[in-house]
Length: 297
Image (tube, rainbow, N blue to C red; front, side, top):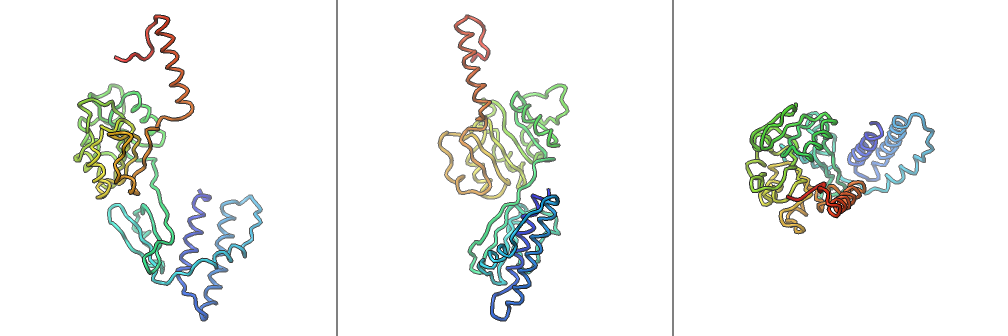
């Protein structure tokens, strides 16, 4: 954990230090003090992260690199994008809203002209999230099993309630979405499930919710999904399938809150080999006049 936190601590302390001073002939002493402070932070953080390692780090060289960074005026601001508050500007004097307890989705450091100097992302964890699954068949059940390992409460919607399950069942997709932080589409495509994720479902999922579609593109009303992502009515989406593949809605490419895959969610070496073996086994069964393993009906 320290190894993960340390780079963030170092970067934040350095940027706060750099943002805190204007560089002029009369302020070299202040900058020199900040440089030595940054060196101490590096040394302390490294010792915490690697307590059993004797690392030979040239701290003076690191500080020289810091010194070459373009100075930023005191008017520099940090722009935090909060999912439920919009953009919040924070001055570089240290007035940073960590005490609110709300995590920022992403941060951007800009100079006084508004030009972005550095951007960074702060992800949210998966463990413990409320996971709702549309379709609890073979694939949906496998997803539920994996999500359970992360301590995620599981709920689902299907044509009927499954017996002998501890998962919460919802008779409508809207109710499932309203009680989920992550909504996963894993059902078969039928006339009943076409556009099963519509505007009502997306609005029920809400501005903190994430939609993941690994079923079929036609399960989701794409125009409503694009609008929900642009307007911030949902937090984000992960899409492996699209309504008119290989075409993808152009608006999705410019969004920061969506992850796009080219219908490749199952493409691992092991899965591809298993698929090839299944084809051969079906062919062998056909020519030996035996029942097919996976007949198409």
